[in-house]
Length: 114
Image 1: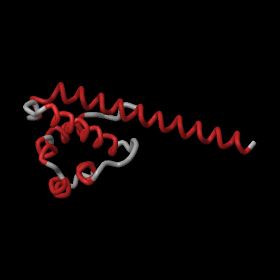
Image 2: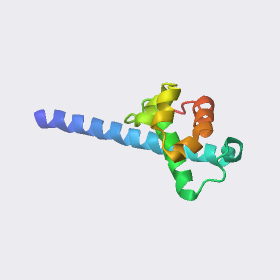
Image 3: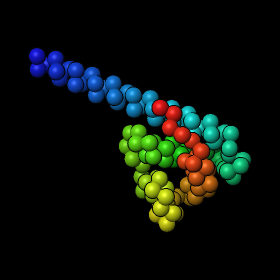
Image 4: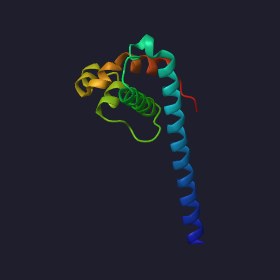
């Protein structure tokens, strides 16, 4: 009986974890598509491939933090989501600074898909 409860608990936890991973992958896909459609308008079309991937990763972290999917992002992401301009600017790396307009457009224009 106890092992059945433990197994059910494990399976429920595993299901929830897989669901979270699937949600994170969906968010990354949304951010990547948004980047492709809006890079020129947001001023990030000139970024190198590694910078582009960094901006997409940070954008996904911003949306996941906003929607409470998985773990909260780092200092820059948390400050950005809280609309703390000084904190976000103080925590941003050089690539995140380049993506600031993109992040603002992203968080304003993309609604939670699930």
